[in-house]
Length: 348
Image (cartoon, rainbow, N blue to C red; front, top):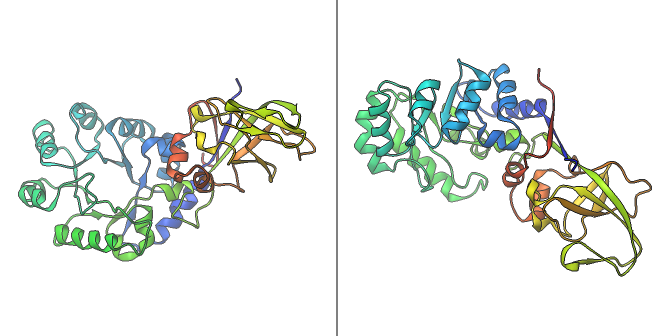
């Protein structure tokens, strides 16, 4: 079966990174989150493009992701691992010079015993209750940890995409309480935190979704375009149904295009009879159920059916599609399947 084509604009990624960097002062270094294969867009290609532009700090979720980024970039950049030093990660961390963000006393013990003298960072929990050491744990191990010279101390905001949420101020105050007076680089903000303003920036920021064209960075340039090939068209008479469970019935004689993609490719079943595909700027509604590999689209109004229809395009970005699906742009991007042909523009 023909596969869709995911067009990825590396220059747009870089432009978004630079725009977020410009929101911070000269004392703040802007890193880049390239976890989950750069949100499904290709960590190696994205990281190389950012590194050529001067980015020197990268963040991944797990050590295996760090290994892929190290292979793409070589030495000379810092690669931080949010999940810290997990059991079984010692060889990867040590051999590749990754920087685990130690999240617990258990991880501190593991890292210091297995890789004494190796670089590391610290992650603190300021109220999100997900990863990081709470205040009591941190106070217990801080003298030992600080004596070993962590490369970075960080925490993560839970509600940064809601600027007026009181949790932002609570976490900022907790981060100050836990880290003020330390002569170490500190990091609190991803994309949403950058947009909250200078007091949230500290020494290092970690933009992620904003680089890839997603909210809450409203000024972001679109990064991804997804074109789905038309496999077949057919005439459907008024009163005939289309797709599983007969959920859509033609009210008039219609022309239906079947395109190659479905929920196995990250296009959620919740898009059934709700989403829109686009033919050179003309909307074409999805009709019937999204199935595993196929989507049916009403193209009756087109004078000519194109070879492909777009589901991500200038008229419909990742957050627009996410709203229809009842989810968020992060999930749309990271769900895009391996069957798509990825084509890159921009970069070297």
